[in-house]
Image 1 (cartoon, rainbow over the protein chains, first blue to last red):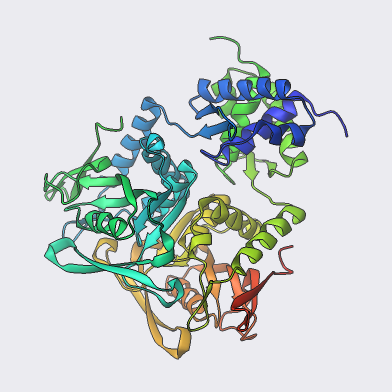
Image 2 (cartoon, helix red, strand yellow):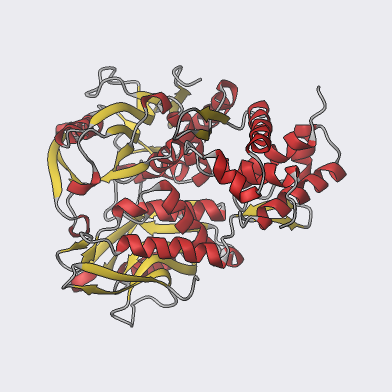
Length: 271
Length: 271
């Protein structure tokens, strides 16, 4: 085998680590791939970590112990997070997004893969320490950002449905208070969650918090544990939400009916 | 400013390019970030490209012209694609995945962010040359792989719904032939697609092809253009599908009712 140069190793290490956020890579894995000694690889990884940190492209962290190694977390610094959220708020204030019934059109924004990824990364960094095993969302609109949050955390996504489906197998069904005090149904495949699992709830929008509280109830039905609730955008009103302790990236302050636009600002919690 | 070393630049370049698949980055962007000359950056990018290629981690491509620059495509080589799809087929053959009514439980697999990403990358590489502007899927199960296909292609996702929703604004609704010859409804927000846009359809499962043909009809309603149809898994039977020219990563050959498992194999098209 040709000797692999440091320049080549660095590019490959940066790609491999950053492509699998929050997953622990054993040093031996790289030694084998590159045919290099552990000490050499340690130096390489330090160099990659310094570069990522310098340019606010995320952090490499060393994990000690038998199952240890190095992992990448796509941490977004305060300044960059502020830039992302301010740009997002500005887009959501564009004319034409206000819909009849006090709704805001956001589907185009949340389904952009790069925007969803940035939102997921900024949400995820609040919850690394809570060590979730799963991300739970309720179909449909929140799925892209929930998937990208799960990607940043290196865990799986679980999707609750409006009704049980033949291709999901047996399911647990619960009722919850939806918008406008309607009773709604939520279903989750019985095999989707196990007792004791630590679950982060993610959704795109919170007004009363009924759907989120429904997900909390669902997680309890499975004897699993809620470790957090993160949403892209929460309305200022009502101040009191059905679910407690939710963190929102953006606050929908009000609708300016005269100008026909929403008033949105980044939440102090994230910037 | 401290002089930024090549080792530092390479890690950062690898991270920036691979994190935004199929997006063109201008060389000037990097010159500014690193305070280095274009010739130096050209050499850096060559080094990163060689390393990625060497370890089958994707390809860097130079795009000529005024809007030119360099882009990353997460191409997956034949051998690696075969490994991914064989492992996926084996997982789908696990006991317990067969459900009443001839359904296969796949939601856990498709909602794993890393699995969805690999599936999306392998699907996307068949369609780079068709230059899609959008990926379209129908809620709910196909969304994770459709989002990851859109990510690899560097385009947005659009999600068709089972019914129009107040928070999507005015919508186009069509009927299509669902499974079991039932007439089903599909709705898509009017603002989600523009005439002339090039659309790749992605879904997780194809049996008769009715839902996919519904998406083809929907795209025509918007005077947009279908550039391809890609699915994760297609059933062997019926051989004649309602939609033409769909490419599947996996073929569901049959259900082995005695052993209670599905028989799944990678499609020759992709390995």
